[in-house]
Image (cartoon, rainbow, N blue to C red; front, side):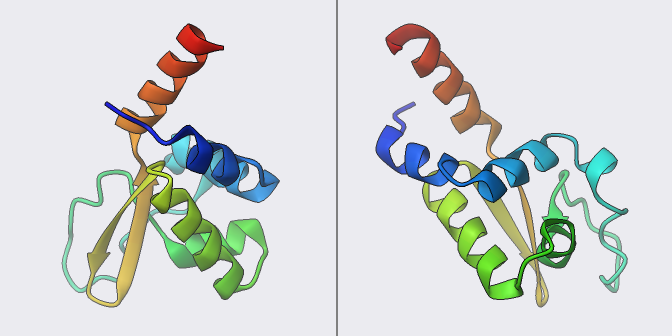
Amino acid sequence: MDIDMIEISKALSNETRLNILKWLKSPEENFPPQGGCLSEPVDLKGGVCVSSIQAKANLSPSTVSNYLDTLQRAGLLLSERHGKWTYYRRNEETIKALAKFVKKEL
């Protein structure tokens, strides 16, 4: 898998964006149960609603949306939309490729 180290480095250069990735590593420990606002049960695959991430980060919704977009463009997050709600989770494939790159190249 090819990864864009420049985009990943930019995304990880912000403490809050780095924290978001850390929090999403163990969403059940860092966020309340998800999906309560959905009309029917859905497998969220460990995804966390933007509003939960925003509440934990204690930042404005627009700032958190910008941060999530940056992480997603770098390939570090995946998103899934359910109605008007978007759920984010880590892209473990990219994170594994990043770890492999760091171990091999740096």
